[in-house]
Length: 564
Image (cartoon, rainbow, N blue to C red):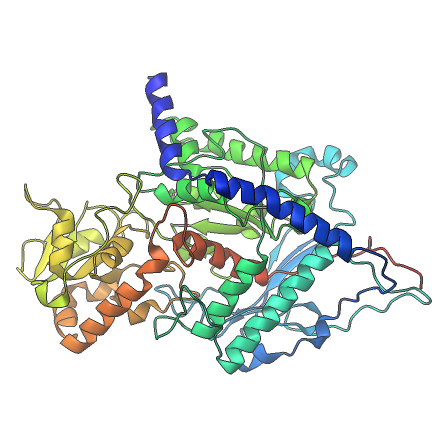
């Protein structure tokens, strides 16, 4: 049994992993040497001190959003605070010193299947949640948050910049200040692209069309991400619980991301250069190796997550610096959101990339990332991509799946074996191909089961079938960028009895537009090995990048000043 499981793990890793060729390795050796000599030249004698002045950036973003929510969410702790506010048309925020955070003309609140979230004031008291059981030890070690930089995402004010002490010179650039200055330039570039609508030429792809809320902003943001984003992956932890994950199951995207970020050019080995810190534990692996079947006891898994964050908080200063606000966890397993609650700061502050993006279970679109659930039977998309033209799809709508959750029983009650045009099945007849039925259908029904996420949405896009979303409280993947209503159909649960009338009422020209747009955005959901620009791996990173742009870390109390 042990050897069989070991072989399975090796196969999973082989499917997920990609290593550069020998020529690529040689390039990795040469490039650092070139960079090193360039830095030596640049760091020669220089009598000037560079001053960070974010006030020079224009506030062009304010013209995009017409109104704001009146109740900001505030995360506060000793010497640390996190605040953000939700825009009327989505999440939008401002930064300290009058600089506005990134937002598009679109958002993920009112433009998803879920209603807008109410904003509550949440108080976080020190010490950090991960080490609150070791309060005395934390206060004596480097995990203390006393004197730590404060986290200031988006505030709806423009406070005056701090006055320098008399006769003191310009402020020395710390690593954190350099990072934030770079992010400030990225925000300015994205605002400029949003205001003038100009798009940079791109040899691979330029987003256009109604599938994107704001194509110019998205494109500029993506290019800025490629230019700047660095992710530090904590090396602590051993497989199979850490640095490992599935690549062939319904949770394949969890393992794919974990394996690919570790060999990605976005990864940095220097935590002082990182914008985001990735916590490489796999929830699916925790369920497989730590959870005792049918015990209903989640405490061992939660203790594992808590212990891991305790460990990195004790070894590094970065968790305490932001109370986790620049840290990332990723989970496709349904239990991911619940396990994140083991650490209050992880749940409330950190970026949580989740397949189960359910706002009724604590998913917060302003800081959390929705990414797609993709079933990869053999670890690849072979035989999954492509389908016939609209004229060769005789079935109006199709669904096949288990009866679980509150929505599917209603769907089957009204439509199972009731109408030849609406093919709804609990189990497909023997010899009938699931993929073949999708390729014969104009619309593919994606109804929530126990959880809101479903691989059917991506399967439909892969095969040229227009997704029909029947979900409550769901934030669709990448909906901060993509306008799902332009290439899918959203139907409320209450309208299930009218399913045929609604779908048959969509004209041929409307249907063709929906179908063609779905084919155009399909590239953003494709799994490639190695990853390609604008594919699902990069879109997940871009969603993380957007959340990081809306958080600003600021140093208080420990800045170094230089006498002129």
